[in-house]
Image 1 (cartoon, rainbow, N blue to C red):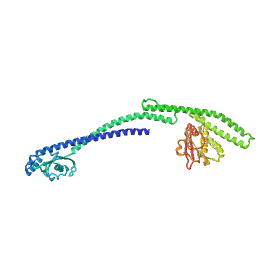
Image 2 (image 1 turned 30 degrees about the horizontal axis):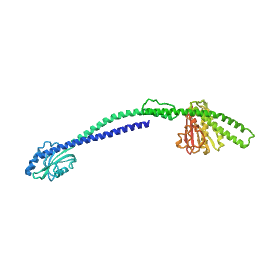
Image 3 (image 1 turned 120 degrees about the vertical axis):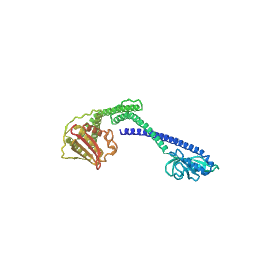
Image 4 (image 1 turned 120 degrees about the horizontal axis):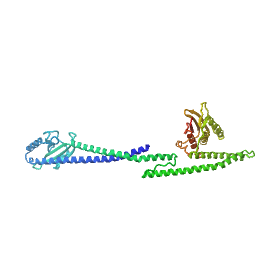
Length: 469
């Protein structure tokens, strides 16, 4: 479910990021277009004013300088739009001759369009910061050409762009709100859409996990007619085929196991009979003992296989009864300990004075579990030449622990060793189903079988059994 939630987040994040990117591009384009339009209109209006005023002063440019300057001052004083636009008359040296804000209003301007207008003898404009005030302005300068062709100054209109910039900001905010109004529905619809996809994917994932966990044959409801429906059909077909193969495998193992039991029984019986013959020479007796030992090993493997098939078919049952579990465990330890001595392995029972209560269990099946664990300890950890077995009680029941002093289990294999047919990196002989059978028996008792690496080396197997089934 975490992955699915991550997929939902990725879907929504990707959708929103694309929409936001497109929205921001649209906002920028709209804002830039509005800014260009506003500034263009403002500049056109200012240029028209400058051209009209320059034409008006054409008559005065034929008079002497004093009358010309006086007419400039008079026009500036009577300028009607002084609240929004400043009108300036500037001489050829850049000094203010007259201004609608007063004759000597402020310091002489230094914006570049003044010099450009004088040089080019044409109307020039400037948009930017005023070096004196730091305010953004729009300025338009028109050259004043005297009757002799000399440029004696410029007529300059200047205004703040504050109102225009504010209008542009309002347009940008409106565009952003429009983008937000688009993103919210997109988020809502995207959430519904991804939910419509993730719901069947979640159901398919849960069923696929059950199939992977061994529940073969289960089917997913086929209620989709798209790519998800094809996936459902494929998984259903896979589940059916695996179930069929599992049944064939189980039937084959069961049939083979039953077929092997008859000759193995004959081999074991005749081997025991021949070994009892006093007339056998030592070499033949030694060979017969090998035959008997291997026949018994094969018989144990056949029993494991039969138990495995019973588990697969849900035919394994427990014959539970109140049991002295300490006595059963000690019998197994002492019996198996004598066998291990022949291989030079010490099986040490760590006895204690703790009272171990009776538990309700199937003693035969638990003896099988204990024997199998001890056998695994001997096969996989026998090189340590020592195995320790112990039992103690807990509040919930009884705990049995068996530890060897061998190389232990690779950490990456610990979660897998209880799986059927898994042998991992071990080179020891066996079917790979002994622990799987033991784990199933312990679980049928309501207990738990845990494998871990012991401190100082070796493998520790812990069997926890509840007091009451």
